[in-house]
Image (cartoon, rainbow, N blue to C red; front, top):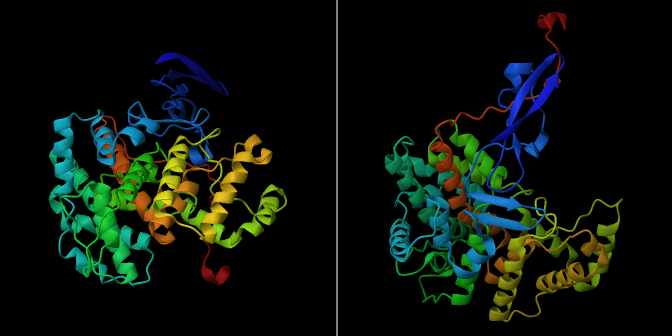
Length: 428
């Protein structure tokens, strides 16, 4: 904390501390503003408001930086694996070899779900969106694992955390299998996290399934890139729900519901729909012209980012991963992928895109990659939820363990009718 700033409102003045983080902009602590002056601040979308103090993730959108516990996302994705990133987010440090082996073992041995969960799925229509199924299934975990819902017990908090990281891919695969009308596939303890998920999604009982290591590594990298992203809408939802004392399963279900929004986790799904709307490479000039026309509401999805004003560091990794997957699968003559590759070329060479820094973002590349791997677009946000679970859990856990934690209660600027008198219905 450094010198205080001052705020004058009428004849009242309040000193407000200026707080400094490890890196990043300074923060004005306005906690005493209302008591001292009787007024609030208004910040729609909380674009200039820090909702909490955190040690987990740092983003510098102007410079294209994403750090988890101080480690650049590029290094974690290139040199580590997803469960190592999970350990880092949960515990604050990279694991030793023995810690990593123990953590992997504990996650792997928690991947099974209660057998009655299979009956729970039968209550959904087969054509239900997998995200709708995930909201219900994850929320229902509290009914199956009520021995780990006491948030005041540190041991129960960690058990719940491990359970969710471990069981989320199992539930996601079950949501997929239920949607396509195939039998559920149980997890195998001799496979790693991503390989296990691929097998649960794409194996069938009538033949042996062999996991492609290139695809497994690509999916693992996708999970790392989406593991946490500071105080976004879904993470803030998890924290707000958690501030009430709600059990962790309910909090994560709330996060999944928020992630489902097309402006958040559904962006890569919308990107694929856009590619489908374009249809063929010869129609691209038409849509590029529309994107450049200020009077046309059409926007190219998958380009630029709200937070990253220069480039998205995750997109560079996904670009490499995407082309590795396409090369491994030898996919040719796919009109959608041809459109995507041509759009990528244009965005990287056209001055209009370069000047405005509208580079392909992580949603653009992840959507193409997941489609090539065989996932339908309805599963894209589900995979995002699988990856983001560890971030939600780490943020929830950090909030619960904060000594001065309070229930979230945003204020408002009321613009409705002033007080008025009720009149009988016969006189209205």
